[in-house]
Length: 116
Length: 151
Image (tube, rainbow over all chains, first blue to last red; front, side):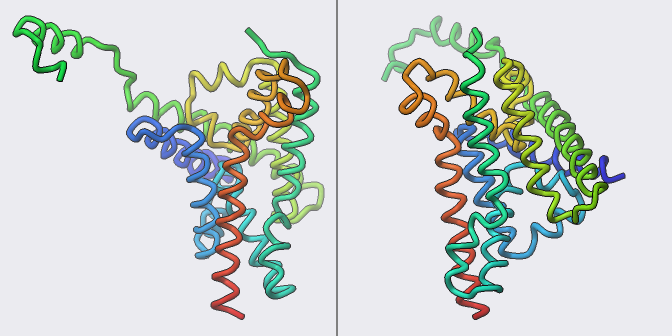
């Protein structure tokens, strides 16, 4: 059943993105920025955890999930280390995805050439 | 104003032409984004379940799952497949983290001829840069507010 919930929630978030692209002047870059920031805010309000409990990867794989990863790391680090956790926590949980994106992105860019 | 100078015939023609302009159907776009985005997330759920099955907690498995999906998105972009999915699926391929990987690799490849530093290195962050700047700053602010309230 977790596949069904991931499909439904992930699909709904993407459909919302499509509505923004089609009905507003926002570009894909604007939508991604908006989604990451929204995810971070919803995470701070404790709402994103509820979405993850419902949809699993349907909540973590879309970009708002990356915002949640950033914000949840900050809050975790503040609880553990106080004030400086605001700085040390931002990449606490996001590091895996971020470093993977940069290193894999670089390797793929070196290996392949543009198509067409 | 250009509009004011149109004759009655031109105005009638303009209305006729506008009514026949192909309009991408909103309903179709949303449906395709929903299905493709949903399928990518369901695939992500499969990867997540695999990492949990080898003994990780759901929280620990999040990072590795993202890494696998990023690898997939980057590889499909390198092969020229992801951009073809993107033309068809719109936000369904942009919003998942595979689309974030695509936003890094696609400009890096496109500007490769400008060199490895100013081409690949700089252009990788054309979209990922703003996402990180505003995402990290928002998370920082969320943290500051959390600290002010709870500490």
